[in-house]
Image (cartoon, rainbow, N blue to C red; front, side, top):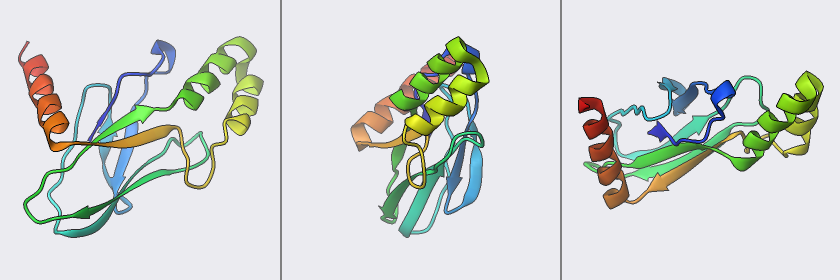
Length: 131
């Protein structure tokens, strides 16, 4: 699990990630977290304290398999940040409301990668860590 690039510089912040409602960690851009879990149904979720809605991704985990998920700031959140830069806190509140965030839709998109994409991403992150 790792966040994708996409945070405007001023609002670069950690992405809190939970698995089955238990905290896994807080991610910064180009970071990742992992957890071994038993086979069965699991739910990855992420939300920001100041944006309504929780994004959820369900996985039916098979024994011995690795699942790769990218956390990506969605376009609507980027629009909220842009509005707040021009109109301040009132713009932030209005844009948050207009963006349609709510119950099952937060500011983070959780995107499951294929095994090949995930493995390639892991190698890329390890190479960056070495340099």
